[in-house]
Length: 251
Ligand SMILES: [Zn+2]
Image (cartoon, rainbow, N blue to C red; front, side, top):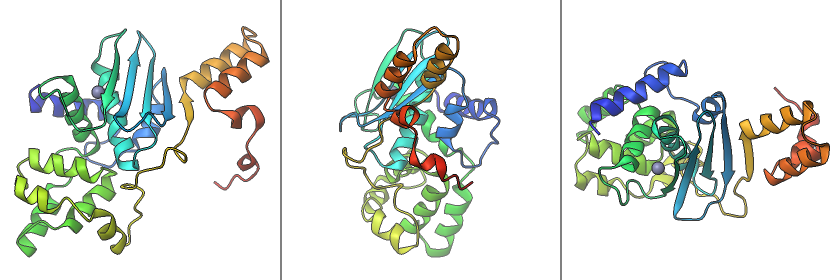
């Protein structure tokens, strides 16, 4: 699809969610504000970043929780493209490599949409141009500043800069390695880049699924036992048994 059309789709999506044109967004919070989406966080294996199953007025989105924070955010933005522009009845399972197999198809469009949604055109170019004018080249630290501000993975950042013609493929290669060490040295939190082990990956369902079960219980259409079964199937033992954090509200 034409780049201009994808940019305008991403910009419309931001507007629909009452976000301005160029600020960083909390993509997880925004997704949960959309009615009808059930969001599953689960370690899906190394080859899969996420999936989207869409029906007429609801959707199930699953995100591989054993990925870095940056990749999870990108993957969710990608799945939101399937949610918004896919057909009802469609189920899409998405590869964890950026536009691996499908150069002109919907997977590539979803990746580009995700990139424009998280990092809109106009959000970062000035900063990088100023940095380049000052030191003659774009340095890893300049990229890290943008990545941390917009919550975008290093791989997605390099991909975007190359696509926008801001860096050459040779510069892309030179800027590829050492991001974690440099980010740490610059005083940033490195969870944006750090993979999560399968053992420690989140297992949780959020959104519509939980609300729907709660409504069915309130309307006495399911038993308490069935409700608990549904919550436990969605890894929500915290709802069934309570959570020790419930007593420690700190906000
Ligand atoms: Zn996809």
